[in-house]
Image 1: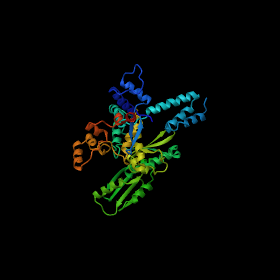
Image 2: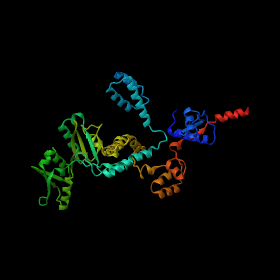
Image 3: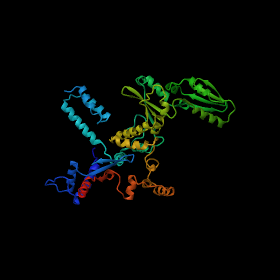
Image 4: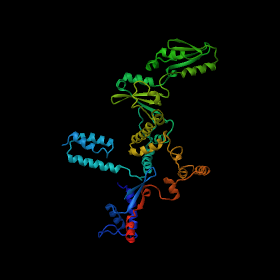
Length: 67
Length: 393
């Protein structure tokens, strides 16, 4: 399913923080990729970030949504 | 070149992706032009792109955006309210005062007004339209009088009927006499255009004065609350504008087109036609007032306002006595107006703060559930789990 712009921003933010604290990137980096945020964006586009979005439904049920 | 049928077939495929109104407009416009398949595809792509772009994403602060979108044009209006052209000879509240009136959900608008459309047969014919208009306008006996006097010597009240007015309003003498006949305790004598009303018992001057006033106030015909009507030609039909509003009774008049007739009294619409009609009335009234001032506001903002006002089945005001005053959270209410009263009452009643809304969380200093603050993330454990499994081996 499509992510909202807010979900994208949060995922990129969270992932970039991990990367900046030394987490190993999950993609092969090209030469010009140094910024954690750039890397996080690329990871998100490739769909390799191990993060799940929980969407709260009106009935308070949780819907686990992949990336 | 594509035929109309081919275009329709292609548009039919988009049924799930575009709303009906857009599809309809698209269909109408596309039928007017000659198209190649390529051109059609690029148009459809563009429409889809624009439509997706115009959609609101979950988490968007729609309320704040709506407030700003109405607030900004309102400031423009205060500066320009005083020079406007009124509708016909009728005086109508417009501009900011009107917007405030709508949003406050007043019981009666300051200038109630109706626009009465007529059924085909009546709308084309001036004679028939005038007849309907006469049936609607309230007429009191006083309106027909040239003068009235009290004759103490002969113990009577003399009413001098104005022949011109009688002719203009098409009132027959019989009609007046019949109405007067139903007044209790008096006898009526008529001579030419003078009607004398004689009390059966001898009366004092005071009593005669009272009688005179009562006679003047006799309701001859028309609908209560409708003080004045204006007949106007609009395009190829006649439309009746009225000062004063009484939707329920007007809809009963023969010849009135009940599907188009409207009033600017929103609570009355809600009472007569129901809450959905009331909601639509709010949207249309605000939109018309803004457009009249040359201001363009996206309807969706107004729809949100109207929805908030109409959620609980009756129309309630925005502000202390309505939407803001009925919020579930104590802190949210206290943040709006009369802070101390709300906190005191909450303390006495032992209210519970759920900290679900925006305002409460701002006050408490927690992240707000809006936009990125609304997203809940969880790390997927599979990588770590795989590692743990490897180590276990």
